[in-house]
Image (cartoon, rainbow, N blue to C red; front, side, top):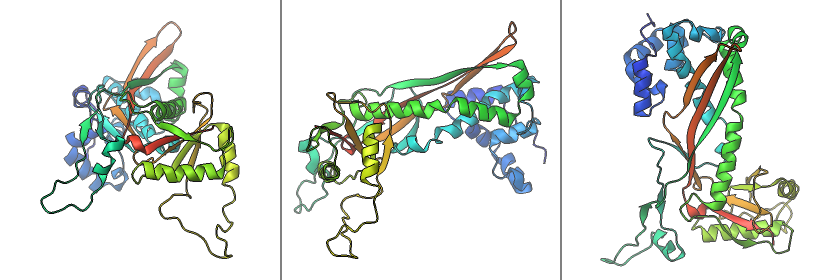
Length: 354
């Protein structure tokens, strides 16, 4: 089958930009019949992205020189599409960042309002689907749009490449180099997640930090146990499955939980079970940017299925390049707009050392 018809054009790039869709989605829609026929005729193309097929149609493969992207006017249009696919793969590539996120949403604007549920103390009963008398009013829970938009920030990088590097590097080598240079991106976003949990997303929803340890400056297993139980009671059934702490407290927790093979029952060979509490399989994440509150170390606890949502402006990956004839280099820029919002205010709480 002739694959030369599958091309990235200026019109399709423009369509992706204005429709806020990834270029792969636009190509898949534009060439749906051709891509299906190609996959049926040649199994090698079954799992390839539309951009990869367009690159193959242009004679650009993994071991091709990156310079091939700049050899023709048509190939130049493939370069931003190629970069976008590299960065799209990186978006969900951080296990630590993903462990903190409930969901990821593509949005079409930088002005993002979250959808929240009323969670004030006097509203908690509204969450209970309880028995009511015939003809009586059902309990009511309020869904509302947040008063303020969440902060959407640009995460970006400028990279400088010599002509020689472009001539010698393959597509695979260049993609790996871009991934390595952008590895700071998840790290930067983890810092933003921690800040959002502690301070809130701008809608008067900081994490509750009223819980304190029993002894000044000391974190014990009893403190954690009390905190986990109280968390569930105060959050209407949510369970802690993730803790975020600084390095000193990380060491304390690591030593605290390293022995997991001892019986927790007074009778040998038996075990107590606590189905209402999640005493096992807690993910503990260490980060030096965990702040202090009032000069005291803290333990951030969350139910990562409900606490934080990530929002990114669809098709906001901007990649541009220019050549500097003077020192024979090429300068490129890559940036994307991302923000974080609280899904459920009650899904994160803080334990502060007394």
